[in-house]
Amino acid sequence: MQTILIAESSPPAADLMEKMSSEVGARVVAATSNEEARRILSDSGEEIGAVVVDGNSTGMSGFELMKWIRRRQDLDHVEIIIRAAGTDPAEIQKGLESGAFCFLRKPCPRPQLQAVLKVAISDSELKRSLASTIHEIEDALRLMTEGTFAVHSPKEAESLAVGLGKICDSSPDALGLFELIVNGLEHGNLGIGYQEKGRLLDEGRYEEEMERRLALPENQGKQVTVSVKRASDRVEFLIQDDGPGFDFRKFTAYDKKRTLDPHGRGILLARAMFDVEYIEPGNKVRVTVPVVEH
Image 1 (tube, rainbow, N blue to C red):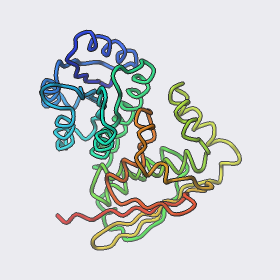
Image 2 (cartoon, rainbow, N blue to C red):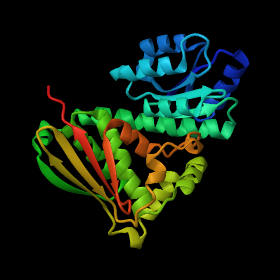
Image 3 (cartoon, one colour):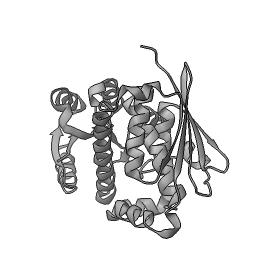
């Protein structure tokens, strides 16, 4: 069972948050401040999948706690949700680009909070899986200089992303690549739109609908092609789906209207990790990852 850590200085608000969070099937740990949340993460961070940070704390700020978490490699799997009242849109953008999973405004409606928490702990589980599996991939993958792969399902996307992360020598890079490959599958090949994905996540039917569409005759031949080229100083990936493309400019730019949605940050996440260039009409994306010399 995943654990959610909630930092909230107001006892009534903390009680309400704990009740709402426990209803998503997760264990809840409470902290009365961001400082206490940091102590809990230091002692028991491996057990925690998501932390709800108090953006209006009078002591350690939400941004300070977020930066501390993101500096800790052992907390890579922790998704950060910031709750705040009257947050400046520029601060929200800064937070998302620095690694926050989502911003929620106080007070937060129960359905919105629970939808965000469900997706956050699901993403945390994926991060754990990628981090665990990447160490089991043979070091021979580092010797690859060029190759092409065909992906048909999210499970294949996860396996490939782990291998590509090994080439890049980074588990976070694997997560960013996974997001871009799955975007090609769900939005490009299977035609699941942004609003529709949000509804499916709210209803708990997203994975079921993905499986249904993958089995349709018209989708049997569709794939996401991932081409890899490695140079001395970088690795380049070209990811192309079989869809008609989309208006990628809407999702490569910050939009405060989407900051409260429980999804839609995959492209921004990838752009925070490496160089991402979409090519018209939007069904092809070029990714460049610098090679770090050891």
